[in-house]
Image 1 (cartoon, helix red, strand yellow):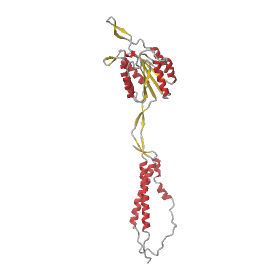
Image 2 (cartoon, helix red, strand yellow):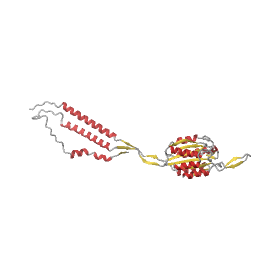
Image 3 (cartoon, helix red, strand yellow):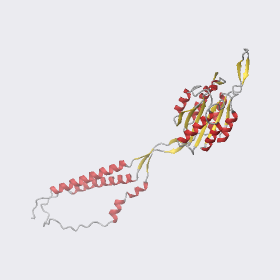
Length: 344
């Protein structure tokens, strides 16, 4: 779509005509440089029709040049198609437990039994893919906490590095406090305080390692406005073989510290979730999508390209052409000014 940024500049189009009508004509007081008793034998350099012809095309070129100049002053521009720009003030950190207990095969994915980390990867990958517009970071923790991916809009990289994680990568124990502290530090170092800050922490155990107490780390998160959602993962019961050769039921999540995870979430304005199976984990991440919705695209943005330089260049070239033609005409008259005639 084409438009004029300053359409009111078109009011200047009739300005030369108004000047010609309203201003008084210029009266020449210069005496004739050559007096002759009559014009017999005086040969004109060009006939009247030729003079009128030259005047006409020069006049219309001047009109075109003036029109182009006014159009350039009105700033023509080309407005592109409407674009959707995703806007989000949210920074979303994911903290995933890689301790040895995540190897427990009490989840199902499709028709096969898988360990907790494999189920987490599958569900979290879909969640990350849906978070268009959010800046996402990834923390992996076990006995130690590591920043695997800093906050970024590149969801594909986050997914790739999550899929490459494996159990025991960060040690066999669980340092929940250190993972929270690392998220707080990274957000603070990048100067991201003040916006929407969210940490989703997934673990299947209790804090058994690290230097920072989880609740103390939660207080630090509260100070910078980091909202923490905690997810306790693991089935409540699992059938395993007994020493005697029979089968018995066990609770594979006996070490899960739900009380501490609930306190962490409550202290920071978040919420604690319990994922007992793959379907439950999927429901949790869908609920998180509702509680922390992806920002809707901001419609109405159109790229604008200014084009004033094209009519301005055209006006300049026409003006230069007319000036050159006037100069050539003056030189021609100067060369033919000495004519022979008889006074009779």
